[in-house]
Image (cartoon, rainbow, N blue to C red; front, side):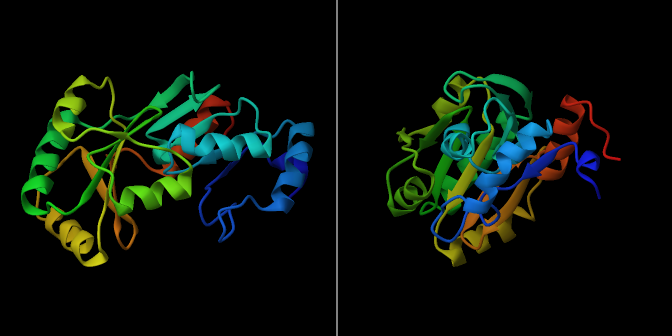
Length: 218
């Protein structure tokens, strides 16, 4: 494959371009100017929020390249503090309301994190929220009652539920017996349950970003 065959690169972040210390691979950093010279966009796609992705994009010098946040539930361009939305697939609020009520009733120990645009909203500050804050460098907004917050938001893009592995595995298994036709549930770690619209995936983000750049997969 020659350089001319490559028109677009989309990359995950955690476990891909970051090492075990959550630092950017130095060799990748050296490649970005070469990609720019060839007009090849390098686009990050991650389960992280815009603010969680911004320091990495800045360190790599990606400029105003799009960021596919929340695995593609929100694709933005520009400053993550004041961005332009290119693509979004928000959660179905009716289903999420039912889901949150279920979790609060049957799995009360679970740490619930709601993401809307650049905002991270947690129902309380616990050890799981603190671990996530240490990894991403973000700080959550604490709101003890999430349901009224959900109603006020224009769009909710992701939920992240964290607890001990046994609890999250039990919750995930329980959800397989429920009917949420517009919502997807998947384990990003043994004790991390991610909740997005069913149309959200990095594969779809790839297709949508390629379309944005008018680049065929071929």
